[in-house]
Image (cartoon, rainbow, N blue to C red; front, side):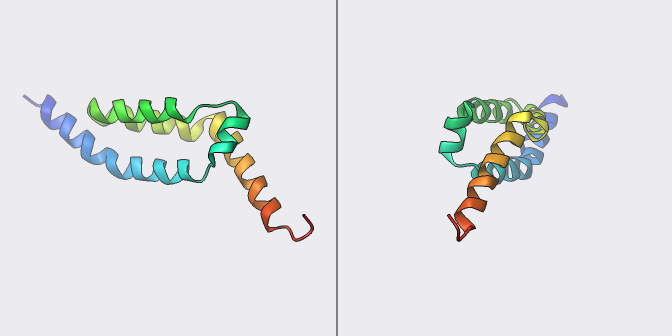
Length: 90
C-alpha cells in the first residue's frame, strides 16, 4: 500500500539531484572522458535505471558519483584544460 507512494516520492525527490548531476556531468568534455579511459554511458544508465526504479537508487548512484575518484580525475582534467585555454602564454 505504501510502496507506490514511497516510489513516487523517490521519483520526485530525485529530480533536483539528477539536475545537479547533469550539470556536473556537463562540465566534463567528451575528450576528457575518452583520454581518462572512463565511460560516461555507465553512469548515465545507472542514474536512468535508478530513477525508473523509484528514484532512490538514482540518488545513491549520484552520491557514489560525487564521491568517486573518476569524478575528481575528470574535473581535474577539465579544470586544467580550461586553465590552459585562459592562459595567454599558450
